[in-house]
Length: 279
Image (cartoon, helix red, strand yellow):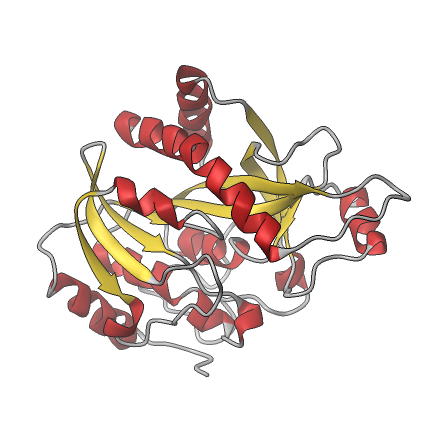
């Protein structure tokens, strides 16, 4: 397990991608659990398995295909991560966020991050799309910040500002795209936990109390690295299930998450296509 990487590691990975395609991606997409089919929309795509890219972490979770697709979507050159890795798989935070650094070296300026999340707002329903307005870095507050270690001054400052991690203009474009596509769009705060166990009822009460609207096990570390390097970010959560009301007992499963992902794919695709058209 690698705790820290240098620019030479990122450049080696980027060079391996450039050997497979001449396309210069300007937008990056990270697809969460059950959302890999979104990559099928990429035109003239070159698929590069993660294990063909030096130092790239290999996903071990069902619903995460494990390929980087470079091609075009709505006229934009894109690099699409068909699946991601998570801290709970045994990777370090540096490894989890390694692909974002590679995208930055490749020239990606805008990152669209998606995830499957549990809804905490009782008004949410499974299948809803939530535009991430802000996040609570609970995992980072506990010490698991991907910026821990030597700072790469060529990429960003030692103490980056995170007061507005999700770009206001991109959020406005997402709202507009949702209206045009007739897709209902929620908006709220995402909180990241380490996983892999789902939350207890006491956990859920606490997360609601501190202002979270959706909970998941990804995204925040990647967004932190993206913002450190000056990359603009749009975040979208696919609500895969909704936390039960107090007193109810409902078991949460990964299969439920994947099934909701299949329902969410066309809604997320419509919003993402609309944003890319407007860039």
